[in-house]
Image 1 (cartoon, rainbow, N blue to C red):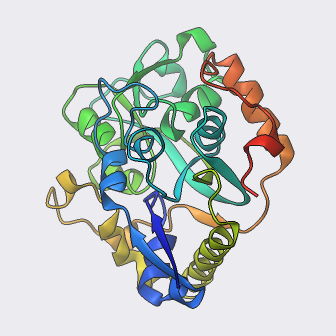
Image 2: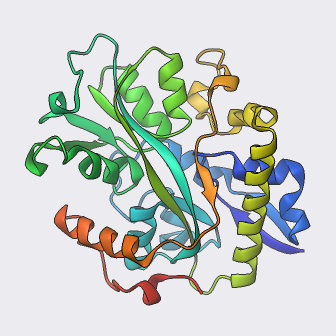
Length: 290
């Protein structure tokens, strides 16, 4: 068995299903979940710069060998900044939405003009905001504030610290059960990233395990919805009795190579947004794990 450490994204159930059903072991992997990094990505990132975030530490501080996942923009930018390589052989398709409190005067995307939106710096919650809102607002009127991870953004919205928050699964389902109002929704792609020099056969085996989990959920999704308990941030575990049967699937695993055109769009958009300060190598072949 090949030992592999994985920090789940938590936007979908595939990692948890693959572990429960023994799909990783069937692919020859002895998988350990890195809960410290996972919970760190859910927590506040206030005061942390890029390359200091919890998901950055395995590459910049801890010298750990961890498979992680992030939005397609973030995974490519992280690789370009020198933090590992992105895996081009599969991608995730995940929901995304901006929520406000039920008493908010914000009701349309246009109402978000100059309103600071809670995001996790240089992650999916961040990149989605200009990418989706620019259809409704000039770029100079789209504002973000770095709150951090999943739980931190939802908590900031509930506590009145911010007036809008960019949310991903399962926080979208949690926000709905808490009566928060959705302003805009869409989907976006995610990728996996690995340390440079990571065993490509282990990566392929990991992806096959996720694909097995996807097929299992296609056959019986309801069986696995209780596994969302692993993705609920610690501060929300006892916040209320969550109805996991209404959480839905979250991110879907797609076993197809990411199109080269999507990589090119990422590079173009990140430059337009003035978020390319850390990019070094900007070539697909130079940044993709092989």
